[in-house]
Length: 120
Image (cartoon, rainbow, N blue to C red):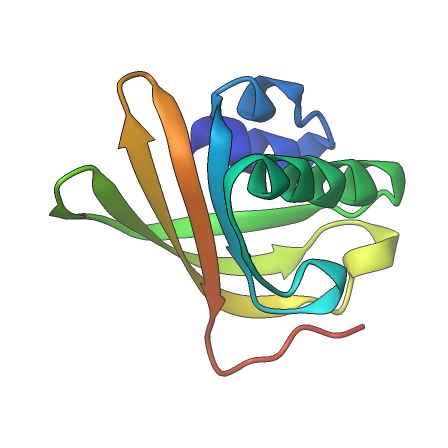
């Protein structure tokens, strides 16, 4: 998740994307990537999502509030997040991200938001 956080802060998503399995599960709550994307389609969806944010200058910083193992290979991360670029200056959110790990790779990333909706 340090690579995920780095991608958001800098727009450099390749180190994070290099950690993903070829068949991937991606869940996102809003926009063009809303919903659940599985397998090779899931991998393509998260790559497109990351490329979109990198190219549009979307940067956020998150304070990681907690990390909790959920059993098996799943881990829950909790963040307080805010925009840190002109395109995201109004963004303020509480987020949870669940990742699933297989060996030294990430097989799933499911992101959920709290009660403060992001601005468009």
